[in-house]
Length: 311
Image 1 (spheres, rainbow, N blue to C red):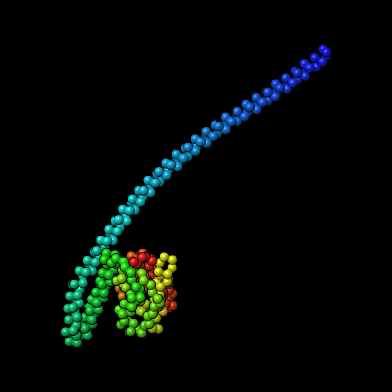
Image 2: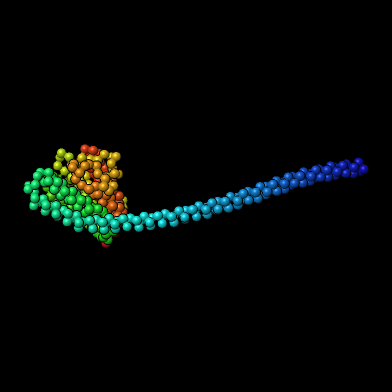
């Protein structure tokens, strides 16, 4: 029995030793886990602090950028208002100047024509030539002033938009250009044209300028001009096509600038304002205008008008 008790004690001691060892290992594992958790929590705190600093920096930069944009927008608004006021003053000046220039110019023209009618053939040829040049110069100046006056009135004296039958406008254009059509043996046709919203007098001027140019700038063949319209999305796209002399692509933008001419007065008379008027009219109506052309192969002037309610 003593031997049996001794064996039991030995087994108990071994068991206790194993338990102590297991406890120490568990404590070591727990210590390592605690240390790792502490380190992880420190890393999290550092990450949180870094994130907070980054957020603060982003908010500061956003606030600064927002302030800069607000100041820039305010500056742009001021510049736009100043530009609008300047344009209005310029339009008013052009209108007043053009209007006031007409009266003295008419007087000059009247006296020069009276001089020509009274003394033509009674003076030498040089005097007759000088009088003729003066009359022609006065007439060109009157045309220039009329065109400049029309250009200045587009914005300042435009009428409210209303429903406009484009076919009626086309018929008025043909009536107004009857002499030019007859003299050049031109053929001017159109497809079915829509009803649009716009300023009747300005749309008439727009189409008359484009058709008139198509008749004027023709080659050896009699002018052939066709007006058409096509619905594309939320706008009507009009085209005025001809078989004329065409335009070099490098001049596409230039021809719409005021007083820009590609030909001399002797070859094709004009003031260089017609297409500038067309652009202003189209812009006032919220559309676009451009040209598609090649030298010697005719031109197609295209402009768009947004579809609006005409009721």
